[in-house]
Length: 109
Image (cartoon, rainbow, N blue to C red):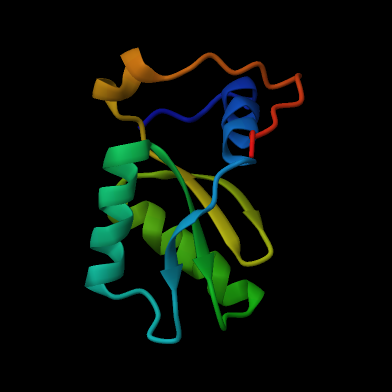
């Protein structure tokens, strides 16, 4: 997968801001079923958040690296226990909304 440009990475961070985590990595760590769930999330959404519980910073860095290596995704952001990852889905191109990364995007409640 080609490296993301800074502009594209900024757009993805803006899109991820309103997302909730779709996968939770618990005390068991990164199992094959967790990786399968992350893969399903990436197929459905391209951009997902993953919450890593009960892990220190170096462990979360290793988790992010392993997730990206196993799924072919790219890391976008790692803040606290939240990991944001992206994998391009060519079928999702036509349904992706335009996002301006410089505007403040808010989710309606």
